[in-house]
Length: 101
Image 1 (cartoon, rainbow, N blue to C red):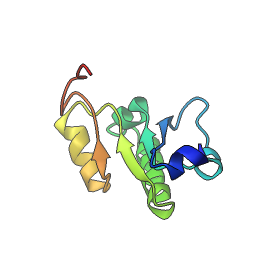
Image 2 (image 1 turned 90 degrees about the horizontal axis):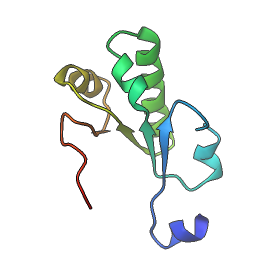
Image 3 (image 1 turned 120 degrees about the horizontal axis):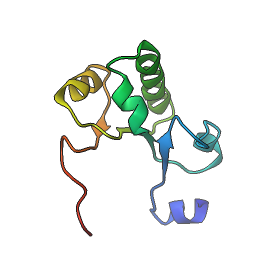
Image 4 (image 1 turned 120 degrees about the vertical axis):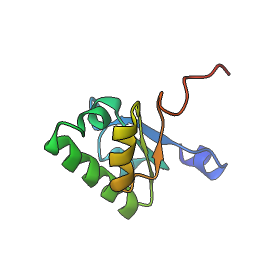
């Protein structure tokens, strides 16, 4: 991965916050971004814990100089919350449906 990174390839930890994604990946591999998993993003409306987790991930990304991307943004309400938390990037049906290559 380091050789590919040196050639200009960019890497992202996908579905960060669930499953097998690990904070250690952020230091062990040449990562450029963190994509926060859709269930965490969608729960920030109703869960103070998920809101706190999301805020911590954004802070972690800033400290490690990684882009942070929210997955699964489907409503203006969620987009507004993400903006207030200074999330730099978002993707989801609010902006566009998946497009063919």
